[in-house]
Length: 255
Image (cartoon, rainbow, N blue to C red; front, side, top):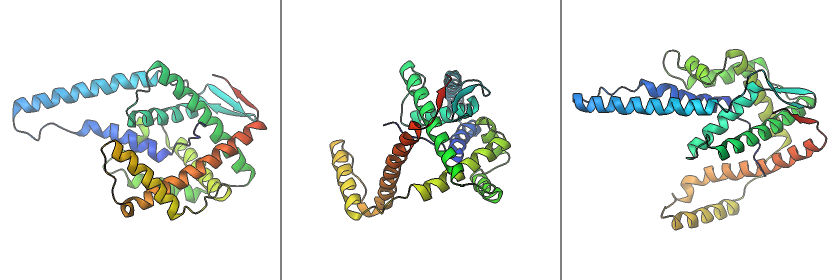
């Protein structure tokens, strides 16, 4: 089963900020002119490669105003598609995969559409059940995002690089809050037992031993394992719910 992915705006912006800030690193720490020149050349090559990669990634995007799908009479636009697409592209790069290959591009497109359909159906369901985000909740969430961005105009630079304006950011932040409220109430997670955590740890330890890696002590990673198991449990329920919603939904994909 495919994952239903709801990209967090903060996560997208955090990654784009890293790219934005990468150009700030100078090569002047070493007094050696030769080493400085080499470092500058390497940096220029890296920047060139990043720009070429970005061009390939951008080719997968579509016009922001193009209708990607109509889901229960609600239009999903290219701007929404491009945001989810960028998130998936970044995730692939983080695990060492090339999202620009022909096969990967096809896979990313399918997953992007699948994610858009899933999140739209969930948000429509959240609307029906009265889950909303207040202006105060949105402003508080935005303030938390801004705290992560140190320096003049860093937050604005990240927004620009992510292709976001404040109106869109507020809208998506509100949707994210609405989504999380729905998840917390409608898809509760049962308590993960110590036995389940131990079993997960033991299995991971075996895989680590086979690969020549040693895991930290259980006490050091117990909370992370618990969170992982909770997410897996919630993901299964979410996927099942979306499949049920699809049965009674009108979904017309336009691309």
